[in-house]
Length: 81
Image (tube, rainbow, N blue to C red; front, side, top):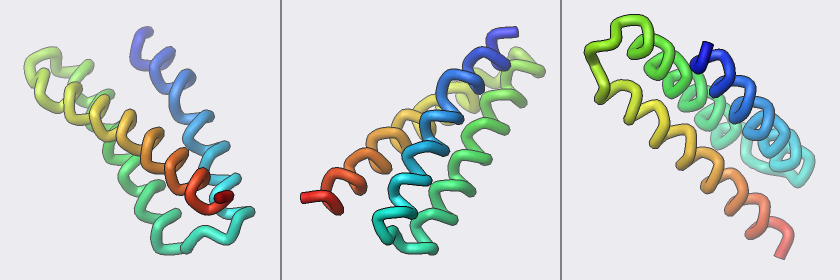
């Protein structure tokens, strides 16, 4: 249940930020890279919760997700100013 809640909290926010970045003329390569990394992060997080043994995957998924939030917001801010 927590994996579903975690997905619902972070993925829509990153997708909205990706939409803003695209509307500001962000690079297609960067947007694809963000999408691929988001998929990898969420899959590693879900895979870890299913196995309950590989905590490193969960930590890596969380780190990638938080990094994507920060990186995408930073790209939007640098594009605006």
